[in-house]
Image (cartoon, rainbow, N blue to C red; front, side, top):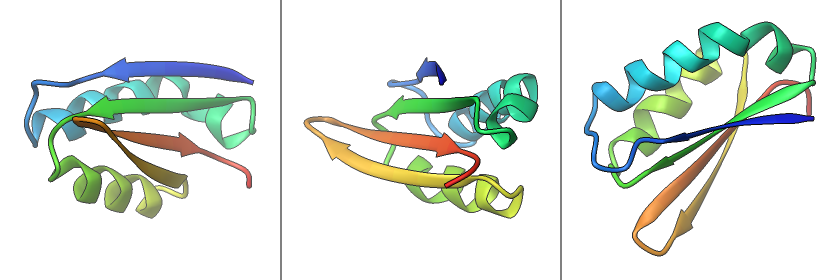
Length: 79
């Protein structure tokens, strides 16, 4: 499985969401097929709500982990 990492620490929403959607639009078919995932690293707490809500409506799945000083949002297709 291929992982596409996006480090958007320092950005605030809606920029976080827009940057994530840009990457999902680029590799969305691979994510849906289960061949890829996008991992977002952010320090914007609001992004932990906006990104998962939006991509879940698009049919993707998410996992969120709290790290020291940041959040890790994993976006994937098949479970």
